[in-house]
Amino acid sequence: MIVDVLDIPVVSAGGIGDARGVASAFALGAEGVFLGSRFIPTVENPAAESVKQKIVDASASDLLLYRTLPAYYRSLPTPLVEKLVDMDQQGASREEIAQAAGGAGAIRIGMLEGNGEGGIITVGTGITPITKIQTVQEVVDELATGIC
Image 1 (tube, rainbow, N blue to C red):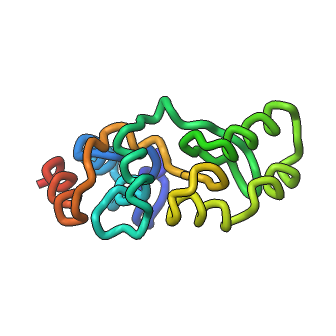
Image 2 (tube, helix red, strand yellow):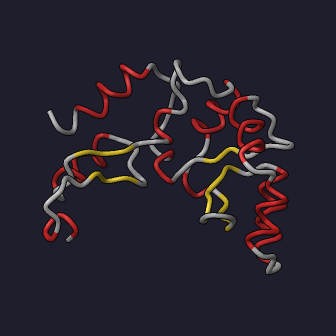
């Protein structure tokens, strides 16, 4: 519906992780796609190898949702994320949850250092079709099969 009322290019994002999702976005009128989580488990990405493997081994049903500033976040389970989810369920404010999360430092600890104890591994629902660590070129070639 958005592409029907706008005169500017629309980029689709969220939940896209394979060629079918890319093809669907284009079929619905998007002129581009954004696949953030799909490129984390690539050889070239600086994320910790353990994080890449956790993404390969996980699916969207494994993600935990919690609210903080500025929005809701989806993350793979870690002790810190489980604490944030519990705080959210207990009615803590977004500010309190953000403070407990430790800001971007917790994402760095989780994603780049692979420290699941004190870090956050934030990914989106597009992780379900990810089955292996690949090069960026392999991912792009695979995604292009849905549109070429």
